[in-house]
Length: 108
Image (cartoon, rainbow, N blue to C red; front, side, top):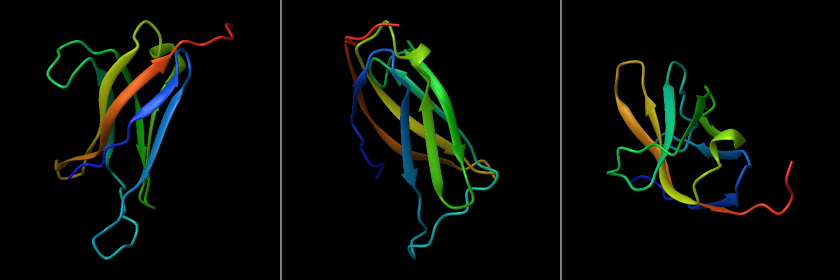
């Protein structure tokens, strides 16, 4: 089952989600050669993409998804997931959840 991590952030802020991935014996998963992606949509079945970001996976089991501040404007709520593809083509979903953006008081 994919872990659910719901996020509340500010509009115009960078969103960073970090997750440790472990093997069944509790050791850190070696994610060398994995590629990743993250998208935010109004709902999972929507064709509309509200935001995208980068995903970095390392050999110590850490997966970090980053959605830049430029992508967290002009929408207020959506659903996301973080997807990894292994060197052999296996697809894994590391986490998923909702993102709610609250209006920012301080403006640039």
